[in-house]
Image (tube, rainbow, N blue to C red; front, side, top):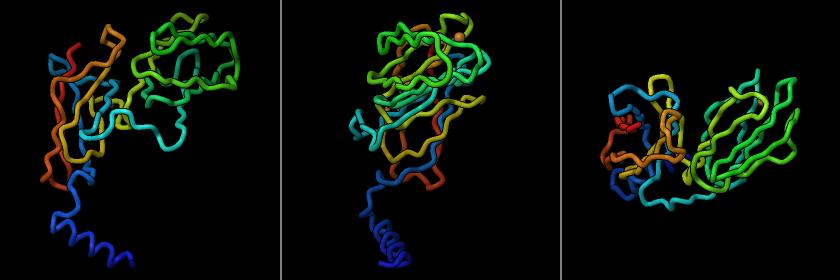
Length: 208
Ligand SMILES: [Cu+2]
């Protein structure tokens, strides 16, 4: 089928409602605030799509990076899907000794330079707190979630997604939370089946 006739067929199918609205993802902005209504920048937001298996294994192995530059972790907050292999390249001249005592992943990469040959696979959901044995002020978190739909909020506490219609549960985490666990938010994101193609937005609250 030529592209033009395919598009016509798709248009007709849409008009007849035979293509499920749930199959179409719409741009959706999430505004995350704390209980006082203040925007939460640098928060991890994970969305569990309604009707999707909570554990979606990635089609191919996914990797991510938690570097060290100028004696800081970079980024200081990394969010990945369960099963992601994370590399820990050291871009500094000084050596680092990265560790985590977190229940989801115990890490102990003894004094090293360059990139350790083996990445670390984060195979359990949750929050891992990282430190460096040499530089006390180095601190970072890796958030591991059972969904491929996630983001970190920008300076205004916003994150952008592409979401299908449905009532989607949200989990979030921010460094101001004392517990090293993601918090399920009381409000879901409701993307109505008749939402405009321009999408919409949801305002959510993460109680610290
Ligand atoms: Cu260090």
